Amino acid sequence: MPNTTRPAVTVLGLGAMGSAIARTFLAHGHPTTVWNRTASKAAPLAEAGAEVAPTAAQAVAASPLVVVCLLDGTAVDEVLPAVESAVAGKVVVNLTSGSPARARAVEQWARAHGAEYLDGKIMGDPPYVGTDRVLFPFSGSRSAYQAHEQTLRLLGTVAYHGEDAGLAAVEFMAQVAVSYELLIGFLHTLRLVRAEGMDVADFAGRVAGSLPAYPALLTSMGEAVRDGAYAPDLGPLTVQAALMDDLIAHRESVGADTTRMREVKSLMDRRIADGFGGQGFSALFEGLGEGLGERAGAGRAE
Ligand code: FVH
Image (cartoon, rainbow, N blue to C red; front, side, top):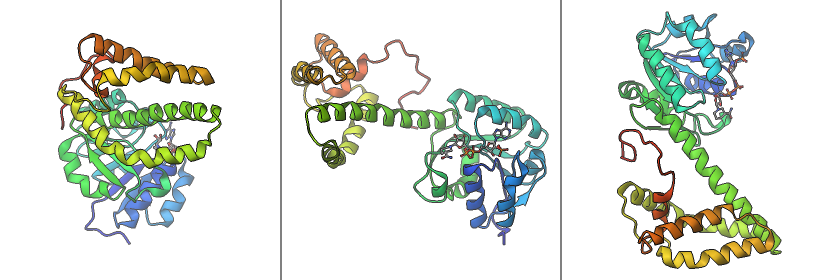
């Protein structure tokens, strides 16, 4: 039975993720209206107590908070024109995956039609929606976030990244990129370990055991980059650089990839040549992406 003291919510899109989201709102007593392009997918939600709207525009009209969770930006572009007449005065929360540029474009669309906009990204799997195992970065209208934070918290662990609607997508893409960059390096290293006849699973276990050192290191590296003040983390570059030729030669001797190690060596050599050999690993940031544009306020805490 919906609890009428809780704000009504509409969910557009009942794929695996949209359905999990709608179920979570229902489970917490929010009157929930749903719409899906393929109407049959709404039947289980109707059984769980949702109102099923025959059109997307009618679904939007039913609630002050409208959550959009479709396959991709193309699907969003197809659905939004159909709800233009109904969105004025609503808060649209778009959880569909996509780029920062797309998020900013949808925000423009929402503003142009009198709605407030929050962009959100989903980091986790549908079965865990409603638990703290799913992370939801949000960005866009601060007042909309504050007004609906309590409802959005029901979905998982939430974080607000600022008024620029693109920042949730930036957070999502950067988090995914960190994983891929770390893990491909890890896999290359497993090649080396196996080539030397060591048990890769045992080695992986020992690496996992060293992870508790990383939170403090990553946090201090972020601060060093933000402040441009590079203490000798991992030791002075002059000392670290002395190891690089051996690391590269060892990799070459077993046929393991040396691309990233050569990049590290070249960055260290340049930084030392520029007179900063006493700084630490974080200082290599200064040699990366020279000429990259930066958005206003980049690097500063929200
Ligand atoms: N599922 C997951 O594990 C990941 C976790 C991380 C975040 N993603 C993103 O969440 C968005 C939705 O993903 P999903 O898992 O719900 O995806 P599907 O189950 O494939 O459902 C897709 C829904 O989108 C509707 N749809 C597709 N194209 C259109 C269109 N042109 N017009 C209207 N609706 C459209 C589709 O409708 P139908 O095919 O049932 O008619 C589904 O409702 C996504 O951005 C993930 O990257 C999930």
